[in-house]
Image 1 (cartoon, rainbow, N blue to C red):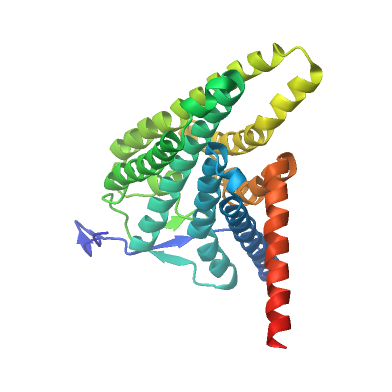
Image 2 (cartoon, one colour):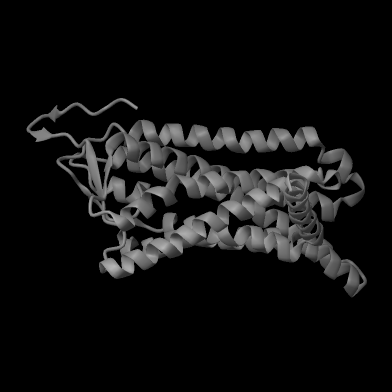
Amino acid sequence: MIPKVLEAGNHTATIHFVLLGFPTRPAFQLLLFFVFLATYLLTLLENALIILALRGDRQLHKPMYVFLSHLSFLEMWYVTVISPKMLVDFLSHDKTISFNGCMTQLYFFVTFVCAEYLLLAAMAFDRHVAICNPLRYPVIVTNQLCGTLAAGCWLCGLTTATIKMVFIARLHYCGKPHINHYFCDISPLLSIPCEDSSQAERVDFFLALVVIAVPLCAVVASYATIVSAILRIPSSQGRQKAFSTCASHLTVVILFYSTTLFTYARPKLMYTYSSNKVVSVLYTVVVPLLNPIIYCLRNQEVKAALKKTILCKGSRSRGDVALSN
């Protein structure tokens, strides 16, 4: 990241921002610290266990679970981009973040959000083929295709973030501006520069439209055909079994898309920072915490693999203790 020059015109260029976060009393800040710390650590633990379970069970080396491994890996980094700085700010009076630090946080945040949109769409495609064309599923959704789609999701996320940052990072911010958020997000940053940011806003709007609308259309189309195929199954038991294979993914899609659409798909005039901070907590903290739980509760194979992983780790540790004695 290229540092801002110290002088631009008659204004001192910004080298730090102030994150306003959640302005509350110190006692409540401490409570929020422990709540968000527990949530962050639990999210890391859940997703790490899912990755270990899926990697350790050869029966789960299937395209569906490869996508799930990528999703868990993504969400571990996704929460790590935001939570540590937020936790530090709960305990500190100095809530500043450097210009380069803010741009770096924003870059990786945009990368992971965009990648997750596309990854959820790829998972919807996987469920579509599995239910609507089960006999050809092993031929269509191969491990090679699965790896290509996952790599494409990461590449598109990185590319989208790079293009956005080219326009946002070169904006001029005067003094030490206050960001009315708990992390460096696009909308708050585009509202505080001391120069015209309309070009950056147009680029952001266009890329957001593409990254959100295209995967959303793919998900809606996939589930429209899935529902149609499920309704044509004659037995109620068969319909229930077919729906159970995609219920976890559909729940995750609804949670993530609804909260992010509320934040990023509204006109600027309707943007209110207080409500957006609450909704942002949902998709940056709560949803990554719930996703592993949802997949475990609704998927017997994942649940069994997790039990095996936890039991193996437990028995191994007990064995090591016995040997040491």
